[in-house]
Every structure is written in C-alpha cells, then in structure tokens.
Length: 550
Image (cartoon, rainbow, N blue to C red; front, side):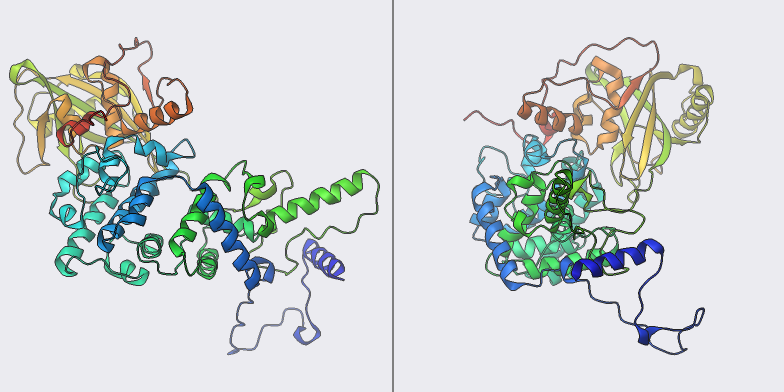
C-alpha cells in the first residue's frame, strides 16, 4: 500500500495537481475566509528526522567509536583535552576555530595539516607549553596577552589568513573579556554568542561543547553535508528554514556525556569521509543510518532486477511522498541517479563575484646604505582589508585602455605625492589576479623609481618607506603580497597562499609547479628564480625566532 500511495503522490506531482481531502475542498478560484489564521507548517516527515531513540543512541556510539580510533592528531585538540585552566582551554579552541574557518579557500581537502607547516599559524595555535611542538615560539598564549597587543601586531600575524576583520574582532573580544568580564570567558554557548563580538552560533557551540562540555550541537559546512545525506535533505541547505532544522537535528543528536568529542567527530566525518565529491561511503561508520545511501542501494537493486528480467515492484526510492515537503529537493531539481549520495546537500547558485580592476604602483627609492625601499600606505580603518598596508593603489573604471590607465594613475600620484610624475615614466609590470569571496580583483601593476624623497601630507593615509624584509613583516594582505612577484629577483615576495600550496604538495610528494594567479606583459621574459628557500615565511623574522633543531 505504501508503494501505491507514493506512486499516486508522484503522479499527482507530475501532473501539477495536489491531493485534497474532501473536507478541504473548495470551489475553484475561491479564497480562504478573511481573518482565518494561516495554517501552521506541517512538521517534516519522519524520514527527514531522527525520531527513533534507539537509532540516535546507535549512531552516537558508532560515530564516537570511529572517532576514538581514526581521529587526526591535531595540536589544538591535544591542548583542549589536556589544559586544566578553563579560560586557556576555551581560548585555544576559540583561536583555532576562527583560523580554520578559512578552509574553503584551500585547493586541497586537508588544509589543517598544511596550515600547521606555516610558522605564523603555529605561532597562533601553539598557545601553551603542553603543545606537542614546544620549540615553536609563543606569541599570545593567553587572552590577557592578546588583549595587550596592538591591532597592528594582530594584523601583521593574521596577514595571509584572509577575512582580516576576524582577527580584529578576536582581539576586541579578548579585550572585552579582560576589561569587562574580569578575565573569565563566558561558560555557555548562549553567553559566548551574546557577549563576545565576532562569535557566532557555530563558534559559540564549538567552544562551549569542547571546552566546557555543554551538550550543544554545532553546524558548519561539514556537518551540513553529513546531516543532509543522513536524512536526504535536498532543499537549499543555505536557506534559513533548512539551517534551523539542521541546528535542531544537531542539538538532538549530540552525545550528552561527550558533546565536544561528538561534535568534532561529526565535523571530522565530513572532512575526511563524507567529503563533497567521491565520498568514502564504504568506510563510513554511520552508513547504516544514511538515507541517501539506502536510496542508492534500492535503486541499484531495482536496476539489477530489471536487468535480469525479474518482477520489479515500484522502487520506494522517491522523495518522502509528501507534497510540498520543505526538506525534499524542489520539483525542478529531481534526484540524479548518476550523482548518488552527492545529490545532497544542495545550495542555491552562487552569486558571481563582482569584477574590479585596480592600478597599483610600486614606488621605489634608494634608502640608507643604498638599500632599495618601497612606499606603502595604510588602508582605512573600515571596509575591505581594513587597516592593512598596501602599495599606493587606485580603483579603475572598467574598459579603460592601458594608455588611459597609465594617465589616470599618474594624475593620482602627482596629486597625492606632489612629485612631478609623468605617465611615460610608469613601467607596466603586468597583472595580478586575486579572488576574494565576493570580488574578482585584478591589480594592474606599475613601478616607478624615484631619485629623491617624497614627503606626504600627514593628513592623508599613514605611509612609510620599507625594505623588502620590512614589507613582509608588515600587515599586508595575501593579495598585495602577490603584487611584488612581478618584480622577480628584485623583490622575491612569497605569499602565504604559495606556502600552503608548497606545504600540501610536500606532504603529497608532488614537485611544486609555477604559481598561478599572475600574468606578465606579453613578450616579457621570465625573471630569475628567487633564491629564497621554498616554504619559509619572511614576515616572521620581525616576530619569531627561527625554530631550533631538536
């Protein structure tokens, strides 16, 4: 009978009609009575929920047993489990969660280990002598230390991680804990989210469950993917309604005795097994609870029976059978058998990033001891890349020819510096492309050597002349660190992104290939290779000692 009901429901959906009970019939075109309350939304069908307590208990046990056996040995996990001081423990979890929210930018699935190869990331994450790598210098091992740091210092060490406002808000929150909360971190997810700037629902849940063992769930990209597959949730997973359902589900599933481990296990499962493409379903510890996998198995069984000419009942592998189910895939996006479990989750189409072009000029001079120096200016304290340093830059209108770009930049530099800049003196180096989350940015890079000093109006943006080493030690974005690469051996900049790539390739045993993201002027000869040792980060010289050999 269930097959017949499901088939009937499918037939109605395909014909564009919906079933109605006799009591619910009304004349065609008639409207509901005025003043009648809107009907409450029906709860999702049981197929989309974890309604069986025995199944929930079994899922918790299977997932935790797998986690205990297979979890990755990550330094901040060791610290969170071993640190007796609750504030220090919460601080370690907090910093690691904020930093690792950038993983979507990685071209590889396991950015965590790659980040650990980069000294600035280790400096943030090594927050205690209990760290497995005690030779790594400590920068701000406590909330109090971070609160006392300057924003410039925070930006300098955060440079390269992206989303720079997060580093700023992290320090603002640390200062609030010290000045307003007597140095005591809030102890619940609700208070963490309410009292600390920059701490959202996910971060609050992670800190509270891992550090304070509060039985509260977490929902991040990995958890969304796992839960959507476990319960065949095919509606737009980024919609507020679906996100609310997933949070309800995460809070219901979390293990009451080991909430932090359970949440980390769920995220670990999504990061290592239930991955976006080519998931390892055979290795999944909760595959017996996965509705998406069950659907695939039923389709395969149906296809097999059909192939061998056996009687084939109507396969009960369609959507839940409830018309207009808020959690099923929309009718316009039916199940694709070729995708299997990767039909889930589904997201709305991403908005295309805005295209922007910027003229950037590397002004250089001979400073003390005839060393080359470069002029950098500080961006405004709000907006994109707030407070970071960059080469003098000017947004360009779309469609400008190169000659016009050069003239516009020369006019800008002339008005800004008071120096008689001539457009013909600007040497075009090439273009550098950087993709922000919402902007496809192209930097048109020029250079201009100066014979004398340039005195800037102090009312303008703060500026200073820096050497190559000082440039790397400054709070400069990854995008701007790509710019000097066009100057070749005269300014061998190494961006954090290239270090991540090298670290990942080193782990995978792959030879590094020439980096992408910049293009030279047509006909330009390749510059000589940098003599800087691959994998090092020059910006740390000003802050951290070189690691000593063990």
